[in-house]
Image (cartoon, rainbow, N blue to C red; front, side, top):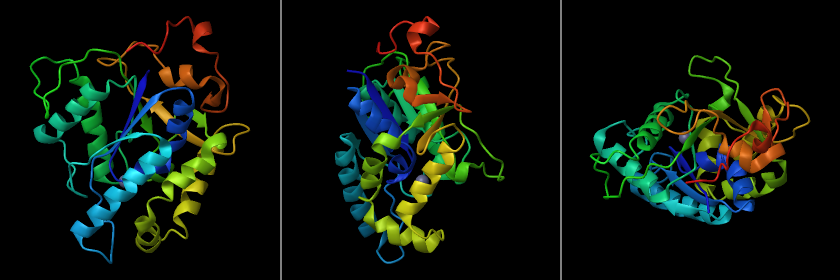
Length: 273
Ligand SMILES: [Zn+2]
C-alpha cells in the first residue's frame, strides 16, 4: 500500500490545506500519515502554554482519526521550529519509518517562519532518507525509495512580500470538502483564537473561502487544493508525479487543463516504493 506523509508546522495546518488531497488518496487505498511539528502551545489567549499543548494534541489526534490517518507526535514548540540537527534527526526517522511515495509540506517560503522551517526540515528529511551515516532519532534503517515532494500553497496564496503565488497543480476536492471541514472542526480551540488574533470572521468559513479561491485558479472547480512539485534531484524520477497518477482527472494543471494519465505519458507504475 503506498503511503503519503503530510508534514506541516501547526496542529491545524494539515486540515486547512491538505486534508482534501489526503482524503482522496485514502479513497484510493493510500495509507495516510500526519505530523504537525509544533505542539501548538502558543495558540490560545485564555489557556496556559502547557494546557494549550495538551488540548491541541487531543484535537490533532481527533482530526487525524476523522481523516483515517496515522498520527505522529510533535516535537517542537510554536515559534521554535528551527532547522537544526536534532529536529532533522526526528524528521529523517519519520520519513524512514513511513517510506512515503508522496510527501506533502509547506511552500519553501511562507508568511511565517514555522512554516518555512518545517518545509526545510521536510525537504532535508527526505533527502537524507537513504544516507547510511546519518543517525536519525530514533534509529531507523536507511531507505532509498523514490519520494515526490509537493509544496502546499502559502497562506493567503501570497508570499511574505505579498507577491501572488500560483500552484503547479490543482486537486479538485469538492467531493470531500465537507469531510475536510469536519476534520478542521476538530480544532475547536482554534476557532476562537484565530477569529480574535487574525481577524477571521469564522475559522471554517476562512478555510472554505481559501478553498474556493484556489479553485478559481482553474476551470469548473468549486473547491481545490494547490500543489507544486519540488525538484526531483535527490528525491525521485524527473517525470514522477504520483499525485497526478493516483488522482487522475481530479488533478488539473494550473489554468484548468486536464492532463493525460500516466499511461499516456509513458511512465511506469507510480506506486513503487
Ligand atoms: Zn501554521
